[in-house]
Image (tube, rainbow, N blue to C red):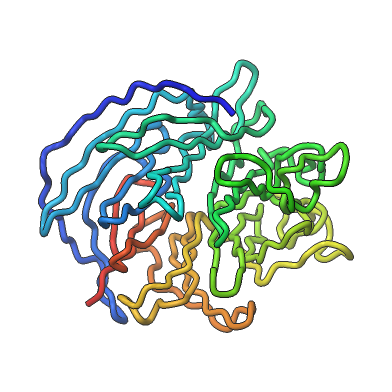
Length: 366
């Protein structure tokens, strides 16, 4: 574990009136555009319903504060060694489940190294609109390629942290248990490895591994009602997946996939003994970018549904599940706001989305 002192530069922007541009009315919600800024990657809502957004390429955080019909933005510049080439940058953000007591915020990012880059996990304390006492909890081995970092973060009911580690476009790493690339990793909230991790008693393996055979899982969501960890994953050309992640399981990549090489050609086989098939797969690939389990009652049509945004399809999918099976799939946004990068909900039940053009949207009750 490494602790660093970072200089935090606060830049407060003037108060903006909400654009309140109604994009779409439907069901029991209204979709509105409310802000435009940098290219964002991740969203986290504070207990007071204000937001923290990760700026993908600048490596900054943006605090968005709401007061009635106005908002104020504050840029928090983190002096992190960000790699921002290719698909690299500042990635996901998550609050500790006991944030009200400990003020912990977790971030994943692409860390620039001398001969490559890694996926790094850090933790800081939120204090007076700044992030202090930033500590690195973990980083993956270095890779020279700048694709498929993943970085999605989720917590379970015992406050254990799950981190998605992409295959870095070096697909065969996903089946190599000696390293953490192409895996779902599990940690205690301080970055140590739980004693009941599935590979903890094995030799010559990365003991932080919880599951493997992962390509590029950009969405994780934990359902405390059923103790289920849901995952959305990008396939190559075809083969995007919705999975339930279980301890010690192999999810197949690259030996098993319904996707193809870019330009054509099979990759592996469609199913294989000892490897877990997805709950559902999508071909052509929508390019899933995140995952939200919406548990609030503010928008009843979405309550207890999985929401999966997509980049290529520019669609927000709504997935109904029962007993860990998909019972219905429909879309509520399709093309209206472009490539959707992330979706998260606030304590008041409002759903926020960001797109690759740097715009913030909300779904609010009608």
